[in-house]
Length: 206
Image 1 (cartoon, rainbow, N blue to C red):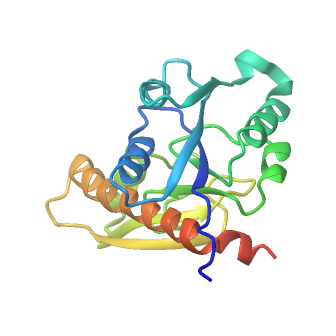
Image 2 (cartoon, one colour):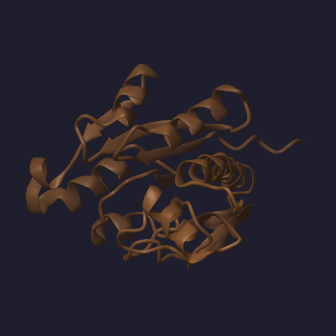
């Protein structure tokens, strides 16, 4: 008798900006490259493009921030993510540190994608073009992207997967950023597919 198919992976996404990584996830689902469903998108920015993209796709959205909930934010965030029924939380360009209640609610079930080969060029202040500027200033001949577990400090969790991207002699911040983004998004989709197909994170957390 064949095994029962695993239910589609349920993903909640935290995002602060335009939501291009969210869109990559949605595109992969639509193209049947990923068996998953985005069940909730949360942003600290009421004007975030990620919220507009989610609403256009019929996905539930929430604006949660210190301005809306003050000291209660951590508890509200944890409750919202748990109520979404998410198997996994993806922080996709989310610019705020998560609180201990939220972290405890999803141990080893919260991942982030960062545009460098961590631990290089990670930590506070290292996001977006700041990362690529630092790579170019350092003279590094290669960079890349890392998908990692989210822990208490910025970019500090153990890596799950990495991809290497060469730095070209004529690279600018924008050209390097664009090339890394292409690999970054595909790496994330590969990791999400691995989770959906093998339940990797649950197995490693036993």
